[in-house]
Amino acid sequence: AQSVAQPEDQVNVAEGNPLTVKCTYSVSGNPYLFWYVQYPNRGLQFLLKYITGDNLVKGSYGFEAEFNKSQTSFHLKKPSALVSDSALYFCAVSPGDYGGSQGNLIFGKGTKLSVKP
Amino acid sequence: AAGVIQSPRHLIKEKRETATLKCYPIPRHDTVYWYQQGPGQDPQFLISFYEKMQSDKGSIPDRFSAQQFSDYHSELNMSSLELGDSALYFCASSLQGWASAGGNEQFFGPGTRLTVL
Image 1: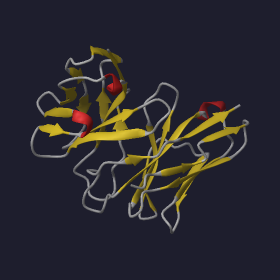
Image 2 (image 1 turned 60 degrees about the horizontal axis):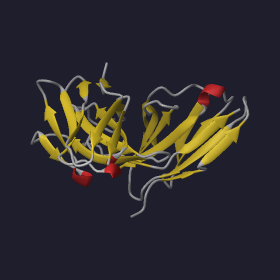
Image 3 (image 1 turned 60 degrees about the vertical axis):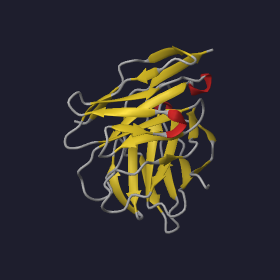
């Protein structure tokens, strides 16, 4: 069965420091991997995705993620955190290698990022 | 840019009542997804539609049904509501196409917060 794990419920970072939010996945075939951010009482906003190609993916708001097939990981990173980055971050996987419209997302439990001034 | 529209934003119902949630996808998007997010939980996939046909089914209770109409808007119908149905219901849309198989990002609406008393 496909699954996504986010081992940290919360990550605390000082503003200006680099941040990493971890994600590992378990899926058959080649996965499509996504990061979404959720602010309180808001919908999920797309940050970035990995489909194929370069393992380092750059996304919105200065975020990037590194796909590591051997470690089945897709950690989210940002070189310098901002207080406004404080939110709930979800890693998600869409089982790839299937034709047609299958594209439902399987989410991790989410990691709350808190950036302090 | 146009986003996904959901209505109503908030809904309060009694147990055993019915509820209908509506979703208007981004224009020209061909796929609609419904997700349920319980308090403090990750979003769980319920059901999806591609070109007005049901394309995938997740953990949707038999008491729920959904459809996508000719104008691509979708409705989630929920009957015999239970206390446990209280959650945030998200609709998402994407431009999937037949061959892309889940590789395109989904754009989420703001959600409908359903409270069952």
